[in-house]
Image 1 (spheres, helix red, strand yellow):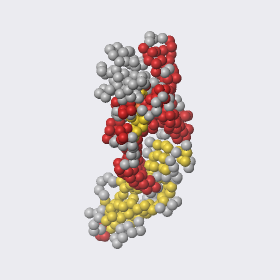
Image 2 (tube, helix red, strand yellow):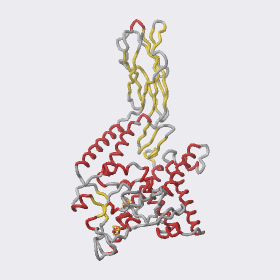
Image 3 (cartoon, rainbow, N blue to C red):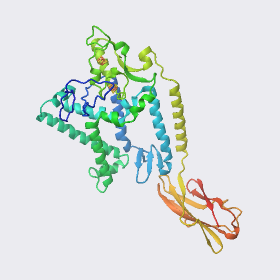
Image 4 (cartoon, rainbow, N blue to C red):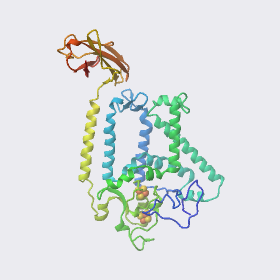
Length: 473
Ligand code: SF4
Ligand code: SF4
């Protein structure tokens, strides 16, 4: 039987103990069933550093929705109103093109990080790892004990102690999943309003459905699916092989120093084949097999091996962060052409984003297509109808004045305009549809001609001109 075959699932008999290899996924048995890992606990300098990062990220996640900048939420996405407050800026659906820069920038940042330090994102910053290793797994250990205790209990007969521990663990997991799902929703519903709606969101069935959905997803992921998310669902691991090169700093095993591995310290290389680095691996791989898609760069194997090296009186670093070049030659070269190319593209995109975000218009006008003929003829005059949409993109109430531009249809005799609402007040982030008319005697008309309507923000004096076309027969 595999040592870790299903914590809650019926146990299966397998003839001999399986070891991780490069040809199979260790967490899936030959018959397709799950080989549920019981990951051993580990302490060490990297464990400490990772936990500091995890708990900082967790604090940012929980606190950010409560923060305000200039009286506005620091980070709030208002889906019904199609607007967002992002660190002091107010964005509407008209700014959606900026998301392009953000997504490309985020992708490139991960490229740069991966090119330099392998899967450091996965091990230190990915929410999946942060919640799994920083929250759910420690709670599991607290309730069900260490790896040996968990394996023994799972192998053993049903007992009150076993049932009580499992029950408690799942209750805590569900409660935590619900808590994190609500915390996530605070980015979409103002948190002061959100807490008044808990736990059943009266009158907000959409919010209730989302809270249940996310609770279910988180519970499923962290109680059972776990490393399978990284191995099966996340596309990033598959990109890894195209992003790392000979100089990328990865977590690896110093084969030159460790081999030939022998049990005991008297002979062979420095690796005593204790398998401690395998027992602590949350994806169930053996780092001594080389860089593998399943490695999420969590550093557990470094701490585990350093601890073993300390115990047997050998220098730490048999498993360590180093480049393939470093492992082979003892020399590393971190900053290389690939990095500089990524960095220049990333900086250019960032600069473009800052410029575009900084020069955003405070109101937006869209000319909408009118139905039917673009013009009508009435008593010898050609009348054009224009339908426009005016949107206030700020958090303040605004008043706008609308008129034909000074040079509109210059040189045409007898032109007039009908602007039913030359003054419009719009609430914060408000919008309104407008109808405008331009009229020209048929005798003055020759060809279609472009002209502008002018929209003036009364508070700032900013004028935006909106181009339209006058058409006739
Ligand atoms: S923990 Fe270190 S010594 Fe033990 S098997 Fe792994 S690499 Fe070898
Ligand atoms: S091989 Fe090491 S760094 Fe990679 S996932 Fe396993 S324990 Fe973490």
